[in-house]
Length: 67
Length: 192
Image 1 (cartoon, rainbow over the protein chains, first blue to last red):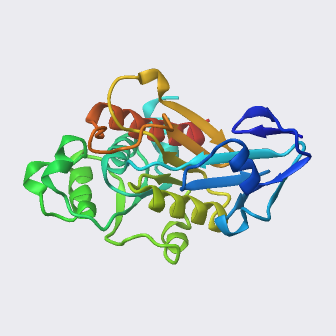
Image 2: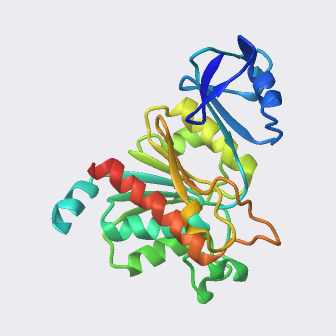
């Protein structure tokens, strides 16, 4: 599948992935994340079930301390 | 647009700022100076000596509640801004009530967990309100890494990478740049 991940075109061999699967694929190991799929916020409880499919627009924001 | 035309537009605007630390205090001053009508300021903390190297407070304010010190400092700029201070710790239960009615919200919290909580609560509870977050402000130099990214109503200012820590402290110049970038993005949203 082909998706937009943080504004960049990204290709995956899988046809679809759960959010958890996507994070594993891209080695996003950070703990504090804000994730949206097609404008919808995905909470942590849903990372194992929410699906990412071909054409989706995904934002994975890594929160870091400082403000 | 003349300055008067700009302040006329901004005088009707209400901006909520979550956190009055390095980002929030400096962002508030910029917005007050340029003529934003109302600022909702939320912070439960007090001014400490070590804040003074980057936060918009002064040595005779050490020990004061940050929101109270901000009321005083904003008044001293000569700005006509109306300040609504909340000496409250933000939680999922109070975020929407505190910030609904704002035309725009600035996220200027410190801990990554607080930032996550706040951003998620605003995105679900006030989805049509523009949210400008500050992310990645530590260290010095590297001006070109400080960017702004947009994702629908969410604007992310900072380098997105430099986490604050003992070997990577927040320093006035870079913190000021991101704080003012947040304020400048607010102006872009309000003025076009």
